Length: 295
Image 1 (cartoon, helix red, strand yellow):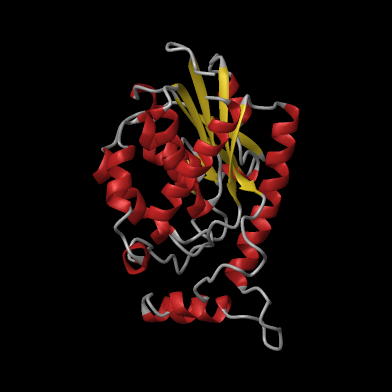
Image 2 (spheres, rainbow, N blue to C red; image 1 turned 90 degrees about the vertical axis):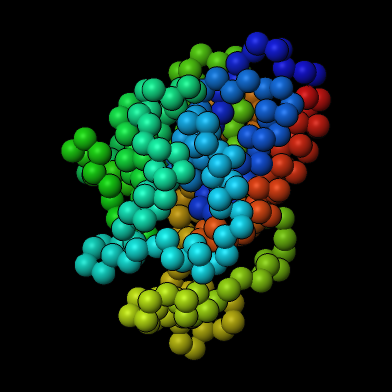
């Protein structure tokens, strides 16, 4: 089965931290197979990838990101010592503006919906106009990791809290088919099979004061066995568990025509230095799904 040459599809990009980089590979395969992406909606990392795609800068971002090593990624983090979160996120925002400029959402060649959450009003916010990177920064404001971001007077946090897979926002595009990238699929490896850097190892590459803070909260609880979770892993798994359940409910209520699934154990949420292998993972998952569906 081949998509009709002029048949538009809408793309839903999900939340999932660093493993969301697999969505770059998914988009590459969709385009290679002849799909015409007519609209995009994304939450959190999905908003970042979707924004770069809609701006025509996804390949530039991929080429910039894939050579980076762990120390390069850590230098992009700006500690927020006096704020209710680990990082301010301004350095990341500045880098995105350098790569893709500062377009407005309503001027992008591909219609984009950035989904964030207004925590005070406890509801989703769909951003379809205004500065692209202000909207994306709000959508990526993982509570406790990045400080909330004020957009048009509203203090916004991560869109994945209420809409880890923003299907409803994408349905309004009027596209004939919906392609969703689920970032919470079944694990590809047995529990504990993936070697991950210890929080203390990561902290060693941070500025000394912040590194000591991260070691304190990242180390395992005294007296716990080797399988015990540190602070960062506990927070990440808790958020992942919530998002996975919400995404399952969203897909059950409004099933997308095509679902490309990324294993939830592909990496830790902060391992952006594994971009090259994550992009390749997205290519493999997309190819397998589309092959099985006859596209």
